[in-house]
Length: 196
Length: 180
Figure 1 (tube, chains in turn red, green):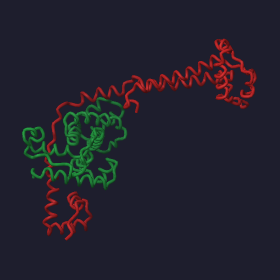
Figure 2 (cartoon, chains in turn green, blue; figure 1 turned 90 degrees about the vertical axis):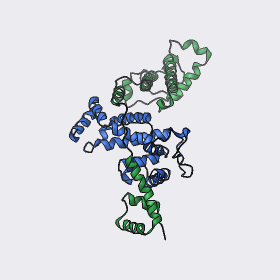
Figure 3 (spheres, one colour; figure 1 turned 135 degrees about the horizontal axis):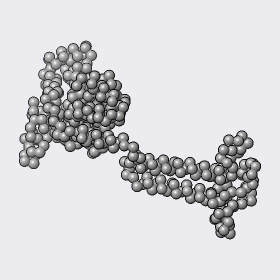
């Protein structure tokens, strides 16, 4: 004789079997003492769990929850968010300064159709390599630094004659590094959970 | 309180009215605490979990279908909050039925803390079940959810939920045999 499976017994008690299956299970149970014993054992759990009384709450949770709600919705700026916002704004600011410095025209002229953006990477590389050249150092502070062959990489725009503001560019690089360093330092100072 | 009044409180809570939400907490804190206590088996943890449940409920209140009663929704959140806490407290209890020996029904002096009376025995054995077994027992036996509803709530296949439920019952039946 095939005995009923645990699944059949449980589903029989949960009343989830289809009508025909349920009838077959019921019929088997009338004649099989072993399956009936197994069924009763599972049924006993239903009774024990149903008997379990509710436990009275020792403390009123309202006094603890309300302050948490107020704290969560207070207008104070989250320091982590503030750092991210500051870094983003700083980056945008530096990009604006960089763009206007590199092409030496008012930023509004960027929309002109004849404008071609310079190869900024190449330009920065040349400036940095020349800035490290010791003989040129006196020219770097408060002056305009002339690069001889800029015509090949700069856009052809009136008023732009290969002159770039080196202090501006140096400031751009230093500023970007500074913002990045501060941002990373702040991230590292947070706990792993806060970083998520 | 009528269901109409409760719905009005929910509407106010969704609009950010803390006092309205506080009233809802007062109405349902006992039920939510009991869910947490059954699943976690510890009063202190259950109170913390109940608080977290209400905070989470407040955050997602605008997703709640206000044409339905609030209590079942809160209780289901409570189960998930408790499950998350238990999962975070791993290592979990052993899943293998053979590894889990029943508690001594007649404990000596060293076992007095575990079992004092019948209800404590049941709670103690519930607590010894793996977290996901406790969750399905709670959803099926105390919240009366179908297999499919419990599976949806736990984001798991129905077959897994049924398997866990049947194994949980088997373990409890074996361990609580002396209480029948």
